[in-house]
Length: 139
Image 1 (cartoon, helix red, strand yellow):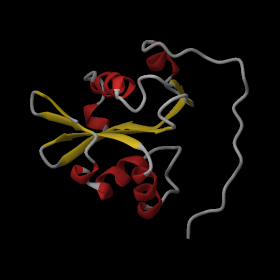
Image 2 (image 1 turned 180 degrees about the vertical axis):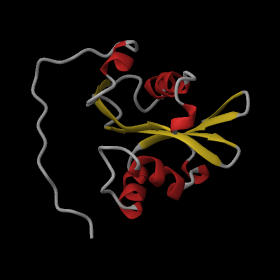
Image 3 (image 1 turned 90 degrees about the vertical axis):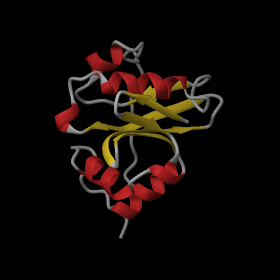
């Protein structure tokens, strides 16, 4: 899938992805600054992903882990700082939620600071507790 808006491209075609640029965006977040390029590349291969680009420059990224039928987990959603406030995140999220891999799934996510954004798109706080088991670090 490849969509365009003005001079922007939004695609799920991983052969178009600039993995080092995506890794740089992800590593610049509070939740993934510890991840290496190899780990990020591995996570892309087993996920449904969208990259937002202008020419060859990567401006945004989001991925979802899904079983294609029941659940999907939206994560690693990041827009380059200079591109925020332009509704690009809204475009990306709407396209991701309508993606054939996710459209029939219950879409889950965890956020520390973007609840208001996600609420605008139909997400609601869930009463269950989110739990995480630490993993061994990649070497």
